[in-house]
Image 1 (cartoon, rainbow, N blue to C red):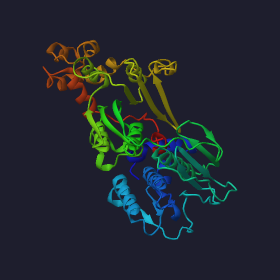
Image 2 (image 1 turned 180 degrees about the vertical axis):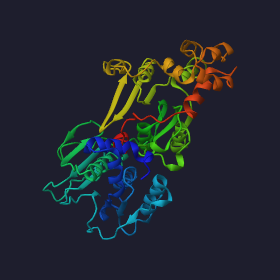
Image 3 (image 1 turned 60 degrees about the vertical axis):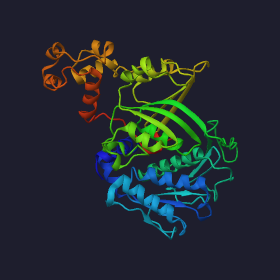
Image 4 (image 1 turned 45 degrees about the horizontal axis):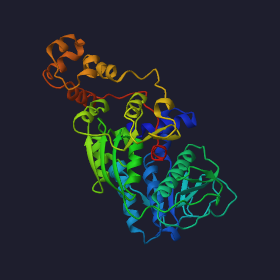
Length: 433
């Protein structure tokens, strides 16, 4: 396995298994995982969504994936093989297994009702807003399922549960779980205790929003939104381009996405139902537009790993803020309605000591004066600034003489972005959830 491509899942695997990251990389490259869709579920739209999303995620931490589907499901086979190509290139092909009694797999995810005896096996399904999981030796033969109208939210959540169970099983840490959860009420209970929730609306909801941060959790959000009855307009803001290490936790990305702007990838994914304006911008520079050409929309969604920026977004006080984050094996969503008594991001999240002031942080990268970055970001870079910059920054700055500070900083932080050895672990079933 290419180290950088799987570095994020490998780091989490190392933490879970208490082994070196290189050991985990070698381990995952040899493991074999089977994704199975029961024949009676082969035409069920929820089950198909769960199956494809399971394969999508498993491919991002394990290259050796086999599938077992009804022989008539050629479209699913082609979809899975295309996913393998996007994630791994031409070197990997998803194998099709017709005899699902074959053993030798290190983990199995079954989409349907049959609960198998192997401790490295998990069964998942969904209906409505409910996602269910039975993993490990449960003493049960069948997982409950009550058909209802199509709802991709429950279906995608079930895929996350199945992929997570497979990940832990490959690390020798299989879970024993028997649970169902509502993605509508956020309740967790035993099988049959939760309501499937309301049907999705017949008429499409109209979106008018900002998406601040187009990284891993935003990929999961956009993947789901694409499958929901939602139309409208979105401003997607993210200064970065996708790198090979992002393919692991980004469920909407592939190797063909490497080098492309993250905001542009969100645009391509959501078009044409949602008209996305992609902004390759620093958030604080984008906010300048709010004084001139844009107004604050009723909804802002964030997928950020920086508390300083999350605080900055909250201070706009939109009608509704949805703050999404993921880390380790945890996912978090905070919803703040402006006129509600609920906790806001300013109170919920403290700025860690490791996060510098945004202007000072950019100044250390670009070599410019942090006061001028904050007070006059669109102003032109002067010779006086260049002369006062650190010596190692002056040569590059000279080529930007007379150009706007914000444009130079965006290029500098994007084109010269370096590898961070302290990156956070991330897995697709967590960031997508």
